[in-house]
Every structure is written in structure tokens, then in C-alpha cells.
Length: 178
Image 1 (cartoon, one colour):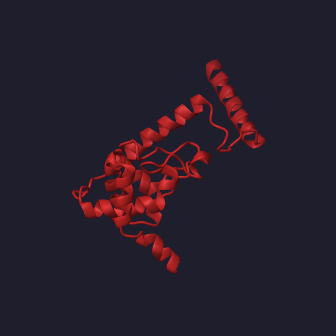
Image 2: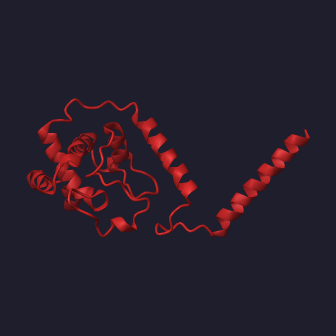
Image 3: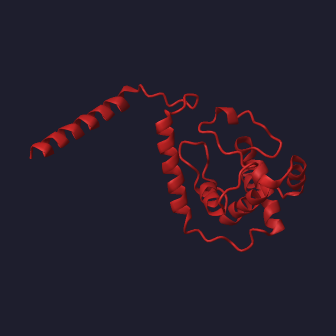
């Protein structure tokens, strides 16, 4: 019984301490003030495990190597993604240095297709990654995923060429017409 009282008292002190910390406003949430290393490691692990878990049941479409789908994805990527995730030959953008955590440079890394679909569709809290599924259908999101599979192997000239041939982002155009 004594251990139970001690445990409950300790738990109460921890809850009150956490509440006081939150209420005090002393924590700096600025994107220019990085997390402690342990905090970042925990958040990164939670994020990565959660994405893998949520994406594990997604069925890949059979047409992810379709050149028309990849071409559409190139246009989508150019319109929506390059400021944060860059493109071949692009070193930075005006927005990217102010983002924390830094988004991956998708022109240099291969991504898991299921996880990419899930992240593009649902976004990521507190990272500036929007949930594109609120404004784009699954077929459009899969086009971006298909393009992402090609992107790390592209030169700057190849990227510029495919983007120049890509259809416009119809979803974005519709928003501007209303």
C-alpha cells in the first residue's frame, strides 16, 4: 500500500509539473529553435513507426510505371513540392531554410511508395507538410508517387524536360477559377 501511495504521489507531481511547464509558456516553439536531440529522436521514431504502420495496408496500383502517370506526377510535383523538397540541381529555396524539421530532398532519396502515398495524402502534423488528400484525388496522389520513383535518377536537364511536357495541375487551376 505504501508503494502505491508513493507511486500515485509521484505521478501527481509529474502531472502538476508538466501542467505548470505547459502553462508557463517557457517552451520555445519557434522553428528556428531546434528540439533537444532526445526529443527529436523520439519524435522522429514515433513519426516513422506511425507512417509505416498506417501505410502498411495500402495496395499499390499496377500502373505506377505508366509514362503518362509519371508525366502527370512531374507537373504536380513541380507545382506543389519543389519549394520544400527541391528538384535535381536545386540547392535550396526561399522557404526551405526556415522549415523545421527539414523536409527530405526528394531528388536525392528513394522513398517507399506506400509511405509516400500516405504522407502526401494525409500530411504530417507540425512539419508544414500539407494533407494533399483534401484537395487532390487518390489517382493524382499516385501520379506524384510514380514520379517520385523516377526523380532521384534524374539530372537537372531531364527534370526540366519532363516538367515542361507535363500537363498543368488541374486541381490548382480549378481553385483559381472559382
